[in-house]
Image 1 (spheres, rainbow, N blue to C red):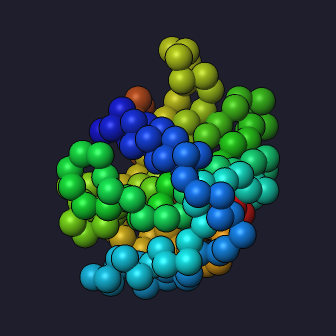
Image 2 (image 1 turned 180 degrees about the horizontal axis):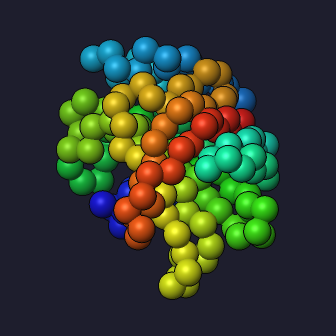
Image 3 (image 1 turned 135 degrees about the horizontal axis):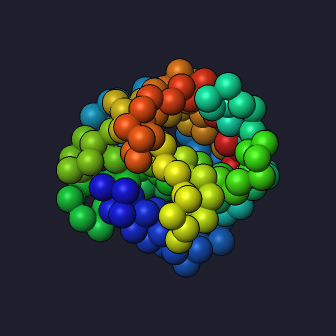
Length: 174
């Protein structure tokens, strides 16, 4: 599942980079993301671009997110049918200096992967020391308000140690 998410995210970011040059518009609010009209969520959305970063509070640590890449337009899912409603990645480092990537995505009701997904990868993914924390949640767990993407009180799972980690909140500014 993690490999598929990485693949989908990479394809979404490539598609965003190849898309139009309209980065001046903001996405519509999608706080009612669980509605059956998922297409209306992305009208007016901006295509892929870099943002200013944000903040992540996880496992008792507040982490500054230095930059973000956002693709807030709906796109066809490569596998499983349905749509990927948005993909956002933010980058930073924890107090120990480990680089991290916060990856959030939403898959619509027609997708094989329906719901909101949050993945936090710490360290070099090619290293044996890399750690991944994930959560697959209900549609609407992640809020989109203008060009800000956020969530609160989500339980992540450390996929190696199989322990729960508390994600207090995150906010990414696209």
